[in-house]
Image (cartoon, rainbow, N blue to C red; front, side, top):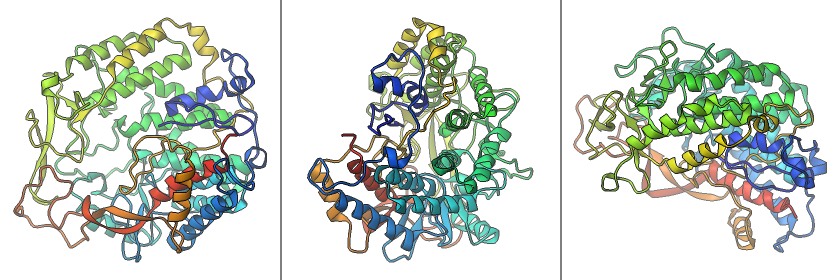
Length: 578
């Protein structure tokens, strides 16, 4: 993910290539803007929206009037508030006639989705629109979203993937029907009744509440924000790692013959990365020393879980006691994982930049050598650009490939072998890793001064620190399966694109989007015997499978991802940085 920073005048600065790096860049933003040295930390001066926003003028640099852009943004926002929102929250996509709606799976009408790009993602773009326009309407809209998130917050302080305002009986019924029958979505096969760090839902919601509190210091946000902070702190193990779900559920069942995996130390889906990022924001913005202590502890779990050579790598999860890799879902076997290893190696280099402690660099050559040892030869590459098998068997160093047989969650199963033919396709079995870039960065860092690293560290608190002005114009996860643009920044639109966005908003007030992602309606549990057909490489099984899949005959509907993308583009027109 990439984040843009702003100067005190509200100008967009060079994008930072990693969310893990934006705090470091923020500490030097003021000096850069003033032409000073970047070798000493400083922070941009705080600015209120009225000071930093570009007020609507007669026309943009492209010749399209600010008034027309602002009117389009307001109309689109009014539509989702008045027609889609439920208690301030949203799901991912809606049928145009209101007959069905979806998050990652089909949702009940009283549900909201927390998992991005859901409710908190909408909140971020609304707050960004407020910053760009100075229009209180967008702040009021963001406040509605915040109220929905607060209502959906677990008492412990985190969030589940989704929330059902119809109550516990309703959400349990959903899990027992739609959730349980999504063959490939095992995280929805049991209702735990707690909160999750998975897929950044808790992190994104927590960041949004932090932004809302800092915006005007309204007391209504203070207690929910403190609960969110406490959730991250309370759930952290003494060794620095975090589980996937919390608070722990004592009677969590086995799923598909596998023991409960939600207590394991989790690196999958950037759990540790997202928590560290949020804690850095909390420490810099609020000065909460507990956040700094937690970050320092979290850094220790990375070298502690790094396995011994010749297989110096990490898994997606590790046990709390032995710190060895351990499996999770049935298509996530106990194995070393190349993508997690590359990500954790990059984190270790971040930690050196933050602390100046070269112990974070010392074992990385072992990691690079192991990654090289599992790299496929050109004639072995199955997917162009993906030279590294995802899962590597411990001991043999051979690639484990996931397959499945059967037709639904009742009669089907996942299994692993060494055969690359006919793998599952909803979960990539091969990854892209830029090993050369990792080696080069490591070599550069070895030549740097630890004192210089410590002097520029984001762990040095800046009293006048300010969060980035915009969170949504860069590579936030905004795919609702219908508007997938990947992990790329949303660029400032040119005149043709601006006019396209203005003209394509329909009379009702939304951007019609082909809903290429759909799902089978729930019809009951599937048959015990597989139906005819090969479902090994498909995204959905037989008619009882409620997993989402791509259709060749999409209906037009309403995509929250499209709303986020288009709003993120248009708000840049109001604040172009000129």
